Length: 224
Image (cartoon, rainbow, N blue to C red; front, side, top):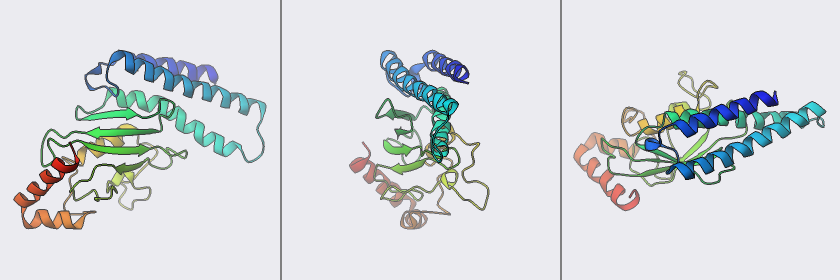
């Protein structure tokens, strides 16, 4: 079992090192290599220790919590590589701590539409119970947007843990889906009909030009 995870670790590193860096999660080849190796080695070592603990037995009641963490970390090894290979050109991911792939920031710089020229920061936290529950996401940049509150809450179907229409979170979804979904909030998924920020949606309905002007004011003041 340990050997299989070392093989996955090695394969993941090869993907990361061979992926072109034009739309990389990390800027600069040397920096990217250092961050990847540090983070991945930490996770791989942790997984080996957990395998050893389970093989030798663990105290009653401790297995479930350990198992949840292991599942998240194993998934992250694979999903970070997948995200690196499929990151939109308008997105950049930054890991604040190389030992914590479950906590990172996403910067989105839309290249079209109302929000073009702005830079919007999101904080993404992957909980221990992932992938049975979705990541927790908050917008750190103040924005005038129908689906994002000025206080940072986000309305995006795939981030809903329970959804009656079937578009909410499911264990088959990945970090790549989350990043692409957030990126689409500025284009395809911009939704004025089912808003979180009702004032912004009504503003757009009432006067589209003035809405655009207010969006640009927010970008000038908060999103540079």
